[in-house]
Image 1 (cartoon, rainbow, N blue to C red):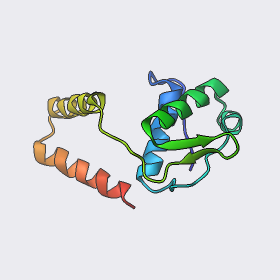
Image 2: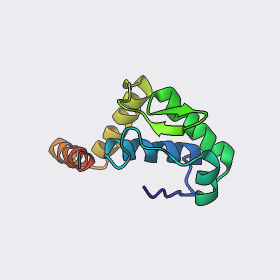
Image 3: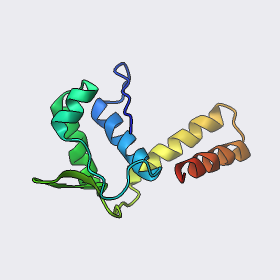
Length: 122
């Protein structure tokens, strides 16, 4: 999985990393049991601070997407026990509202969501 970072974005780098890993898991690019790079290796490879990577891994662990072990490192969880948070629902509502205000019709929004959902299953 190739990670890309937008260093000029308002989204913190740890959040960008977290989001890309979650998408990678959802799309099957990262499979259960797959070992993730060490914090140091990922920081060196991507050019971001080790503490940034560590923070992203801590969040992913708290959310149930990865498990960590001192000997094995970080591994994609077998079946993430993830629940939809209120924050996620608020974010989704905001994005749908923004699309509506941009002039998109309900049918177009639903088609776009369906397409993205199907792309994630591949």
